[in-house]
Image (cartoon, rainbow, N blue to C red):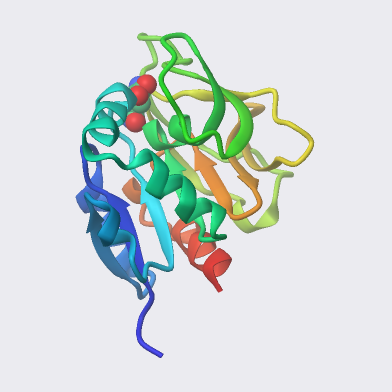
Length: 192
Ligand code: GLN
């Protein structure tokens, strides 16, 4: 079997750093800009950037339905930062359209302007597999009111920063900006 191919939605945002992280876990990054780019992918990443811009690009490229079908077909998706917003069922504070794949409410720019970028370690006592992960936050959202099917895999200062529902993951931070590849590895494990 060849290396798995992992798509990265390439409308806008942190595509190159995700591509490097995907290579780092032994998979092949594929830029996704149209429906046929999704063929044969093991998993998909929605990168951070600006969710308003990314949703406009998805409108223009007709990608809402294909991405919903990708998820419905059981293939895993990881949304990071702006991508996490697109995974949420609901958005507060400048709402945008979402794929509604994880039962949480995303609050955009929830850390305000004064601390709009920072790094912090995952709280001890959460899912052991992410203990000590150093998370980079850039104008990050918060994920609130997780529904009963949502598992919180990691918290920082008590806030959920990585959540999972089925084969969907949402991280409010930028795992591609750390050397630590545990979040990308987790995505690949979900594809098995
Ligand atoms: N603040 C951005 C938004 O609301 C997300 C920032 C990011 O992805 N780094 O879309």
